[in-house]
Image (cartoon, rainbow, N blue to C red):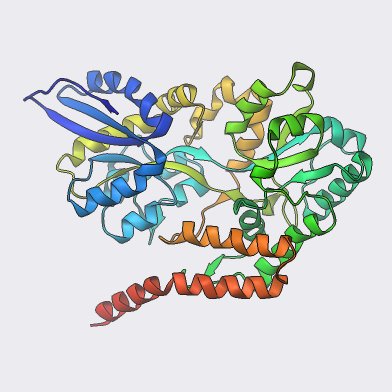
Length: 413
């Protein structure tokens, strides 16, 4: 879908590609930008997330990339590796609007490769715990503990209170985020040697994996995938489980889907960590705005990036879409700071860490699901599953190792 302006011979027309609802909503913000920047016109092209990755790659191969685009921050390393993206350090250095310290540090870092920024955070995503505080209170807890040991004890107490047919936490077995988060919390790099080999068999991830598996082994979490729960909000409401690690989109869903009598019964909490709150990191997710190297309108495109990076515009975009702003200053608005459910996200966003910055990270994440499910469902011992996962990951990363070796040889000449 295109948000177009009539063809004009004067000025510059920027092509801005965006995905899903974000693309549909950002078009509403373009008239104000154009008014501020006479002679610059913006054509927004919206595409579904399911087609965006392939379309962006195809546009690069066909030398038809847009000037500006929304890019999921896990895609940044891939598009940087093929030299599709414009390095942004010179632009940031000259900008009065875009500064690294204006954004959550872990989110900014998702766009930095070899000390160079290739994207500017647009909106953010992370995971926290949604929980039934009434059920925790019955079990003797007024909040989520800050350590793994305390969290585990709280889950055991909830399970005793709720009985054998109910559970402390829902951890869908076909999702990679939960074991990945726990691994990061335990200090695992996920990949080692500059992202060339898997680190899943190493002690840090193995420790996290054992904690994760124990929740299923001891009946604190049901052996359910997302498709095994017909209506997750209804089950949360009736107390099938008391906790759920999920993202900001579910704040609105809980408000809409839970009955009025339960609206005060649920809350959100930052994640615990192995040794306390400081180690309770979560994923640094979201989308960024990038410039493409092939753009012939980089100066004008950067003006658009600066406009979308302003705190007031990030807040406006948040109100249009429900996405959380990447600008720290935007969080001072009462619509976010005054909402107790978003407060946990603000705290958690100060403790987020990027996934490994390799093009293959999404394939690796899917392999983690396979390995986890094989153990949870009792088919493979943990040690064997992690060793097999490392072998699969090492094979996936073979091309990366070849490229890095080749680059090193070129540099040495």
